[in-house]
Length: 171
Image 1: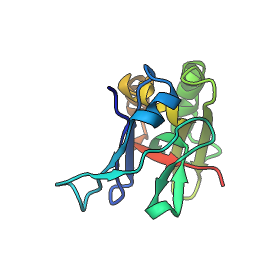
Image 2 (image 1 turned 180 degrees about the horizontal axis):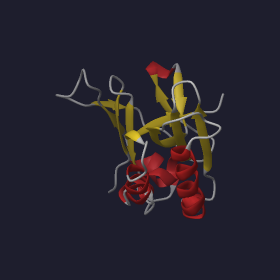
Image 3 (image 1 turned 30 degrees about the horizontal axis):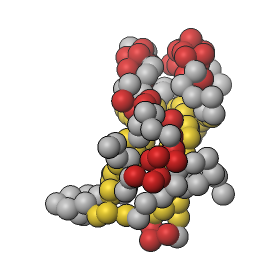
Image 4 (image 1 turned 60 degrees about the vertical axis):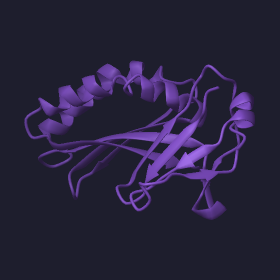
């Protein structure tokens, strides 16, 4: 029997979800419990009630006051220069353009957002997928994440290359 396991670390702003595509969402909801732990409760996981993970349903958070039904993987870095003329930002854009078809192939229901802050020189690429698609993508190393990170780390003027997994719910 396969379990759907969800573990979050709120203090580190990091969430992970492991799901299996070998079971339908109905089978997952009927057979699985969700296990959560955070940085304050590492010693023992807390069992949460079973949830239905079919499209439109969500996983509860904050004692039921919040929930999520999508998971976002963020790739981010700092760049140098003015956002209008930055050569490092231009080089990052070329990497995104090169890998965008592969990224969009991750899920039929993926959303890809690019964020650029000219004030703090942040570049972020955020890929959000339905809950039921995240597990397989995570098991595959969030491909093409390794390739993307390797390429942007090689760009002069790029620093603080990081990743983060976060829950997502459109309100």
